[in-house]
Image (cartoon, rainbow, N blue to C red; front, side):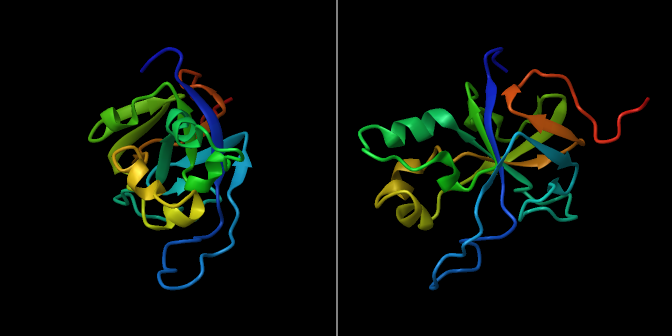
Length: 167
């Protein structure tokens, strides 16, 4: 991974706004920005709507590129915040598409990139009309968490921070 790669923002949400809301109004669960998040192998991020005991789940955590958000915001008088995509980890300097099908490490925590986090029709409402089409192929990365630890805003190369460090 590039030495300059960074985690720019971290988010969790206690509930789903779009999953299970087809044909209805979206939910109102906010994305909560955090300075750090606890990753639990095979479960997800503590406090997030996708946290569950399913080691095979494809989307225990989602990554999204800040560069994509900046491109979509170009020319907008009042761009929405990057939380609008409802992804957990906003990165800078990472080729997320290249991580699909690979095991990779961020701050000492191991992940497996399962698939693109494909944009859905809700993006047209959450961001702007046509956003879904603009995000095809760059909607982010869904991943499994393979080891426990704490992710923090900063370099992707920061050392591992286990949940229960040994004395």
